Amino acid sequence: MTLLLLIVGFVAVCALLVIGAPIYVVLTSVAIALLLNEGVTVAGLGQHGLDTLNTPVLVSVPFFLLAAVTMRGGGIAKVLFDAALTWIGAMRGGLAIAGVVATAIFAAINGSSMATALAMGTLLVPMLIDNGYSPRFAMGLTAASATLGILIPPSLPMILIGIIAEESVPRLFVGGVVPGLLQAALFGLYIYFVADKVGGHPLPRASRHEIIQKNVHAFPAYAIPIVVLGGIYGGFVTLTEAAVLGATIAIIAVLFVYRTGKLRDLRALFSEAIDRTGVVTVKIVGAALLSLWIIKSGLPQTLTQMVADSGLKAWQFLTFMNIFLIVMGMFLEGSAIILIVLPIVAPIVKTLGIDMTHFGVILIINIELALLSPPIGLNLFIMANVTRRPVAEVIRGTAPFFLLMLGLLVLVTYVPEVTTWLPNLAFGK
Image 1 (spheres, rainbow, N blue to C red):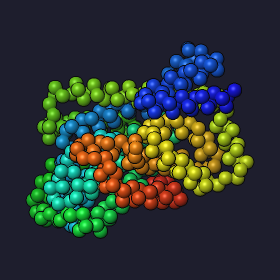
Image 2: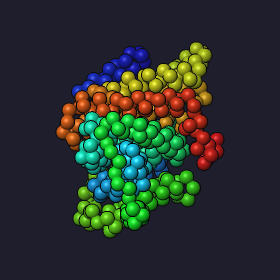
Image 3: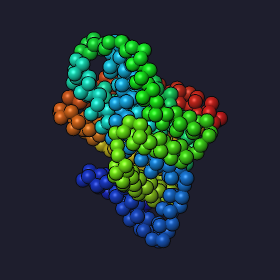
Image 4: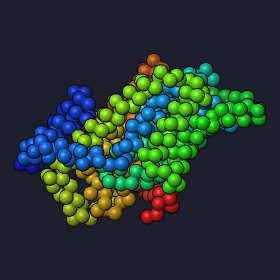
């Protein structure tokens, strides 16, 4: 009976997602139906949902989202880009590399890949094209670089992983730093070697006065990731306090330093942050209810025992998971993958002795790839919408960067120290 319900539940989830139902509606409705069938009371469902939300980590979400929506429309992306351009604009491929650097810093402030794609797409793509780069390359670079928004902390998917897998979110954040910097470096090296082929040319070297002026002007924007990440890693503030500080600095920078927003805009910013927080909250409740039914079904325990009996090695399991996640990424968006897959595989990960931070970063890189994978890849459609060009052209432009990210995935998967070295250094093993 449990197997039959599992099959029915899986089919129901897939069918609802195919017809376009939001993931939070899918998870919550299917989980409630399955649990009520198992005899769980409505009061029991409500209590479990409340227990799941009773975590300090969740308090940080609205403030990270407030910082993200403030910076997305506050012109901070251009400030960061102009500052990066003063340092590397004169080198071969300098304009494009500056775009990667600015995107990486913006990602360290923003925490959302789609918001990064939207902000950098409207800024970077026209500048690259005007400077002689091919439109295909400009769109591919920007769509791929925007995926750094969920790998370089703070990252909302990492918060989801931390809550569902009961893993330290600051540890996950630190685990994403080195892989994120490696991804940016891989993109930069690739640009340097192909710059002559894709049409770009170096810009005039910036004067010392311009370098100082642009970087001093960008200091408030630089201060956000320094305060947030430095505060967390240094142990000076909690995750929630860091989120509040980041949102506060972002608002001050946009309203009073760069003057790209007005006080009357705050209502809309707060409203959007609250709306997005509500969606995240309902997703977490739905995932918690589905996890409760999965645990009651005994599926994780059965799979864990099967893995233990089979003698499967950790690297073999990770290889299988990468293939499975890449296929899933072609049909599901990132949060759906986390919410559906993680409750089932988390016990197996722990049984095999795989560091959950290591697995969490592998999961995030797979979600990055999903953002560039047709037919669902969201960054592809955002870039096509921003530039008003065919999605097929964007896909061709992302292909070389997709392959570089696959190489990064292989490195992170089979050399766990790339992910675990910095968290172990910061927090101990």
